[in-house]
Image 1 (cartoon, rainbow, N blue to C red):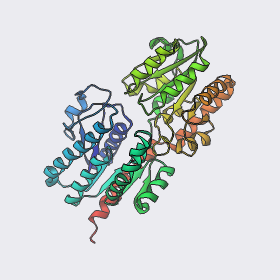
Image 2: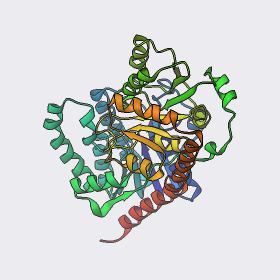
Image 3: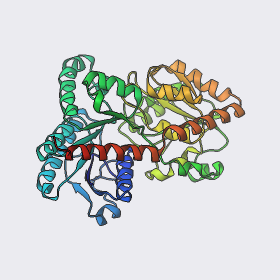
Image 4: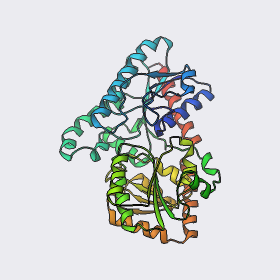
Length: 410
């Protein structure tokens, strides 16, 4: 089957969607399908125009020079979505002579999705749309309330129109799927495929003292850790303010990652005079398991409502590292369900500094044996529920079904 993978990000970019699309590309090729990838020139975490050797040598990975906005700016991201969709649509029209059976689209909402679906529809090619964050619902934490009330109905209507023209839509969790399919009336074409993380690196035993020495992190302190995107929506400022309430020489907070909010977080740490908050960078996503071996407890923060329309993938990596988690998440979210079911976390409301600080103290005072049991439970749960092989098999099944259905005479 001839499959086109359209992805808004792709390796060497260290982004979850990039890894998912890359894994799918390799898996489909190994399964015997004829696969091509269309994606932009890298811009996330790799330098503006950094392209890895693999992409240069692989003729089946097509890089389009569309507008890119790695910064978390609403209008810039909207333009990025539209321009990438426009470039992909143009490329598809010129490449249509090669024939396609199905398009897999993992792209930024909402404008790029619409243009790509329209182009595929004109060619008679079905689209399987992979939705990572539900828009416009995800905007509720990003724009003023009045603007959301005004713009959300129009954007939701646009999204509904696009989704109803797709052969299938893939959602990343049960709660998100239920809410999305009810609001878009697309229950008969919705599928749930949980995001995954390659578990193999997390099975390697790392020497904590050696890793700490390598990254200049003291190994004799109780270590809280945040590893992930440092965006304005991460709620990391809450974790910093909470740590300030419990700060002491025997505790440290290690923050690893890049993002638009890194400088503001560093200023906050400096203004509060926090000596035991350490920022580290590591562009290689293969080092995540090694870095996380330095932690005693992981910190997961979100904005109010943020975990309802999206699921932070860093939570899977945390669980695979077999360490417990202090999480500030919406209680009615999928991530809260996962953490409760795994019995591996102390939960508190989002954006509540006092509750988060108290949870950190409880986590530290919990006997090491109990923390070890919680961590083991977290890893076992992640291995059962976030399987790379199961996710890829299900995506292939959905794509093949959509392509075969399109070939059937009507």
